[in-house]
Image 1: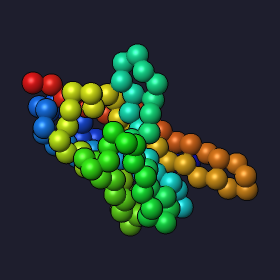
Image 2: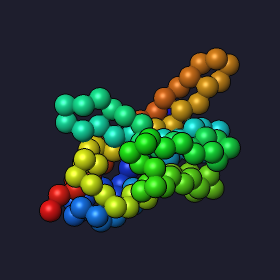
Image 3: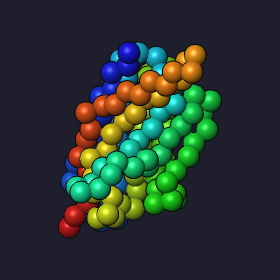
Length: 118
């Protein structure tokens, strides 16, 4: 089992930047890692993900503004968010996912609030 703890959220003005970090309790080298967000009244959505091999994928809303990175040695995943917009306001969750012998296991952090407002 993997425990995930997010940090780095906060209040930022439009156009500003934030860096979210996710620390895992164990090795993440075999996990796909992702950042999701959930705004009030909306479904949780994928923001960015990275495979165990280092490939990355971004939601259209994040392309060109956000960058996901992983450090397997430190068991951390980060999300650099630039040019933030009010619509980026949400709770951001870190996710670890792995499929072993056909069984997929998902682990979630507790979330960190990001508020973009002037």
